[in-house]
Length: 475
Image 1 (cartoon, rainbow, N blue to C red):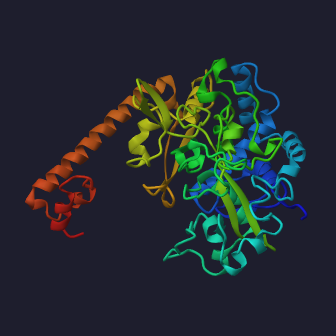
Image 2 (image 1 turned 30 degrees about the horizontal axis):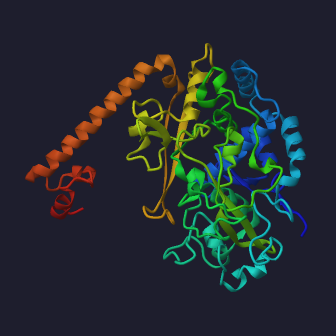
Image 3 (image 1 turned 90 degrees about the horizontal axis):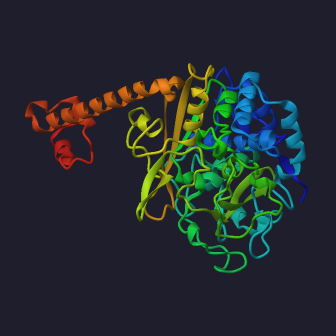
């Protein structure tokens, strides 16, 4: 087969223009014109997370891949030079995309982007449409339909959704540009409802315990990232050049190596690996082995089986997650928070700014560090911290059942030393408000005169008396 659809040149990334319209850009256009775009404009917030992580992996590799910083000051100088320039350097972006152009083909006989080229029983990327069973709507083992690839539908192979946002050909298959976006989404968020594809404990299946019932890496996270007034600012704010904002040599990253730069393609099933030591690699992590199945200009579905996984405890290369502390023996270890936030993000602001129980996300620590510098232009900037989380079923995590999307805006001065008293005041005030809401709920429960009181809507549904209260009142 001939290589087809190069991500660097073809239009596939949905961006939001200043006038509110969405438009498809190529990878090159997105990076070189991001200062003229408001944000990504994908089909779902989770898809935007996946595409944003990919763009950042490209930037890490293109701008800093071959030249790790010698000192923290070098990293800070490089970041502020980019911020003041207001755009990414065209020559370095073009040089990187030219160097790795052959790894950006979505369809390629040897190295398709983030995919394998073959499966079992003679299945290959060239003959998959015929051999997969998708043409007659009878997919064979490990083959998923187009309605599963489309994350806005996310329909399981065994059960159709009662209410769908698409029908006919638009449900059964997707266009090639759509498939490129959803490929990144599946690699980031795919569920754990996957059986072994190859024979366990064979050359093609390592059967690592780490991969057991494992959703894809980003699916483990309560993702937090910063948004600026343009896509350029968003990319810059999340371009963390010192790990967790550390201003010493321990904050320096090593060589940036995204997964498409691997010398050999990774094809083995259920592989346990060490945590990546650089952002470019973890942002493009290969949690799944995937192969898009194409019939002319439509993607009918895809082959999937489990790829790689690493231990979640103390996975501090990840800069985009809310953490929680988990006790292991006598030691407390930070792990990504995998359950959704219990309330709106503004009510849980301590989880991203400061908390005795949780570590702040690495990207927040980084922004705090650059805002704390003398004469930093970031101190007075208002930034939106965006929270996105997919929720899986409580059993085997075999289905995505909900998507959470929220955020909170505040002045970055709150992240400086001068802002600490204000943070304490905000948290104390929020606690007073929460206590008042609970007291009002108690009052509504025990007072007969409040039968039609609107406060009943704010009653905690986990309260033992909530069912009784709901039965006595009509909404």
